[in-house]
Length: 139
Image (cartoon, rainbow, N blue to C red; front, side, top):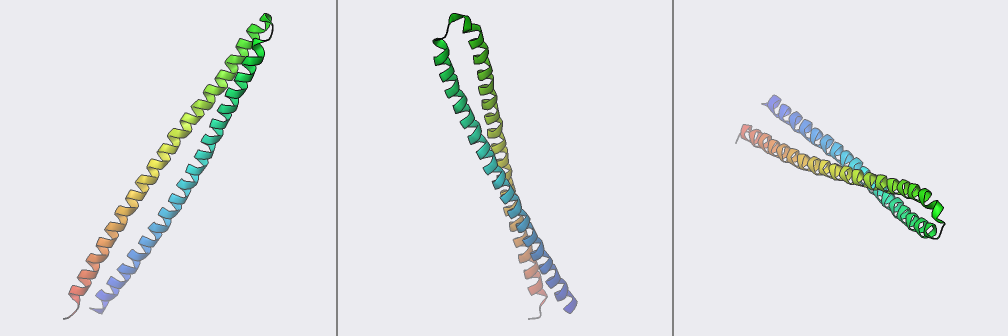
């Protein structure tokens, strides 16, 4: 009887430690995911700012080049294409970052759901162990 109580106590302590370890790991994963989300948001903002700057630069260059001589038209078209490629590349980077941010957010939500389910299972197991332990006690 004393051995069974000791085993129950040890099992409860082990479960409690496992729960604490899982909570700590979940908190660390959440912290890392939040950090990644912040980094992705900063990268996205930087990409948007680069796009805005490129668009402003494009507008300035177009305005300046319209006043230039007709022989520079070929050079202007090449420059415009390069700037458009940079803009498209920046927009593509923004799109990729948005998708990555969405995936990381989904991972964070999945992790939170799994952690919640684990906590419920551990709680039920603790209730089960407690009930069985109480049932073994003499009246």
